[in-house]
Amino acid sequence: MNLAEVDIAARAARLAILGGFHPGPGEGLGGTLLLLGPGPDFWHHFVQSPEYRDGAPDPLDRWSVRVLGRIAEVSDARALFPFGGPPHHPFQAWAERSGRAWRSPVGLLVHADQGLWVSYRGALVVDATLDLPETTETPCDICADRPCLTACPVGALTGQAYDVPGCKAFLTGGGACMETGCAVRAACPVSRDFPRNPRQSAFHMRAFL
Image (cartoon, rainbow, N blue to C red; front, side, top):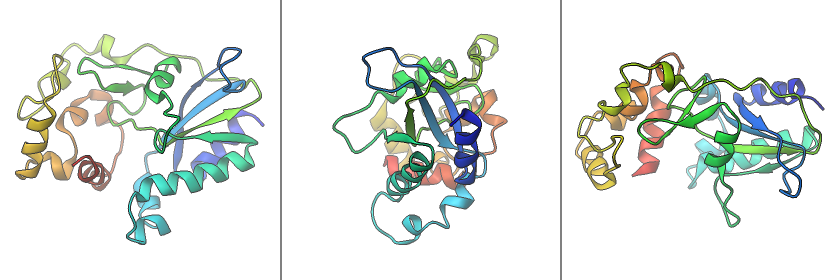
């Protein structure tokens, strides 16, 4: 098993390998931990799934368990998820260890390829020590304007704090973010280059409420 083979299995499910790292001895996380999340054409694939169509709660989590569980089987790996604990796995800390995601000026994780749209559906723990892509520098270091700091239409999400009640009040009152996704996430220059379907963003906003 190598990284290319895991990538093929992930791409078939419209997932992307968003980073990984080599855990230390004693962590119980194998030789390599790989983080997976939605790829560019994920939404069209997901809405055709039985989990999305059956009307039962938590369709995306159920889809993730089924699909990542299958990828784990064919990859001789173990699947871990950012939901359904305990145990509650530290996905944000894992993402930062990958060298492909960092804390942004507004506190949200920003990814090298997906910007502030990044989300994680699960992780694969592989016994082997796989070769991983080289880490990069945070895109925030070369972002002079930092539009994420001023993009929120009601000032709910800034570099100082996140006013969750104010955010939810704006959304329930018909705020544009409800249908097009969080304006702060969309303002990131890296996010602008990542082709995320607005319906996917609306799905997550409904789940947030």
